[in-house]
Length: 167
Image (cartoon, rainbow, N blue to C red; front, side, top):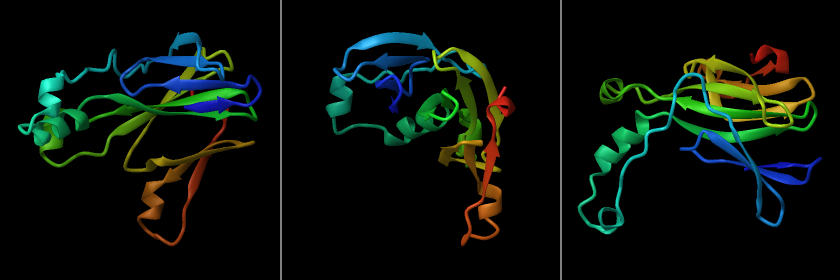
């Protein structure tokens, strides 16, 4: 969830929905917009019924494998400086790759204008960038460099991507 200070609205995106929702501060949804990734058509749902969830016979290994190998969405970031939104899409490895130990997802950043219209998307390597450490400055979106942090864990290094660099 993200707060748009200019419109005084909340922007919500769910991990398994390709839509983003705009809400007023009273909780009413005022708009929904398709903001899906070009890298996958839909998010696959894991069918879990309530009896299974409440049972003592859950297959957590199967659930983990499913979660680690199916695409989904993460956070939405509002760029107050440029009146833009950035949505993170996780591009997960296939199940066989997860079974061999590759669990880091790649990711893409979807950029939207102030009306939540998609204007670009760029794919990033999980080996090079860390989606868990991001922020916004006047210059653009900061994305942590995993590859450089691995060389010196006393320093955080970020790359800055201006809006025109995410296409």
